Image (cartoon, each protein chain N blue to C red):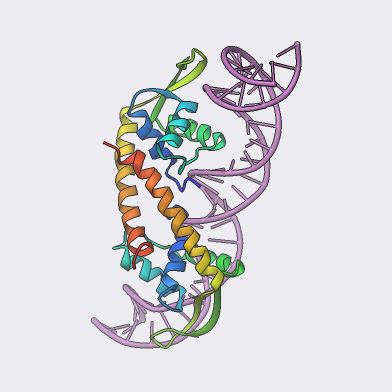
Length: 103
Length: 103
DNA sequence: GTCGTTACCAAGAAAGTCTTGGTATCATCC
DNA sequence: GGATGATACCAAGACTTTCTTGGTAACGAC
């Protein structure tokens, strides 16, 4: 259950430099202490979608272990999208918290 | 964009006593300062779904203004569901925040 | 030589939400 | 007296995201 936050999480992960899909998922899971789990069936469609929209660019390269991997990096549009989604997320969760966590 | 939080928001709203659909939506919008907007096309399907699952019970009655309205109230199962969803939401948003709001 | 990890991809199903439309009553304002 | 806005409900279908399940392949460890 990613609740529409996956795009922002991927974009944010890539602010640390280019990464391949598998590494992005691992970063999100590790950093969130497994509170956020990214299934591959969610991850790759999200990457294609975001590349198609111009938020990411991909090229084939190698992983740290020397294996074939597709490396994604942020575009300028991706950075703008991240800023917008982060602010929207902040506002939305603040609104939900006012209701859900009251009392 | 409700990101799967609508069920929990409705359940929480009903802890304040029985309300009809329109009043639930207004409460959520007002309490969140319009950060969370509930479209009717999202609201009513959610209410049916939750009634079908035994989280809510409905009966016809009157609104504050004396108009015909269907009043929903929480069941015991609904309370349990609210507790579970609230905790899941808390954990999930904490995980997302660790990534998205870092730096 | 099987298992776990790394790495990618495809197809279809499921779920939730949104869009658009409809019904009806009542109060207010021009 | 007619339009508008608010209150209150409902239906149908489209859309998007996510999940499930399956597949390919290479590598190391046991």
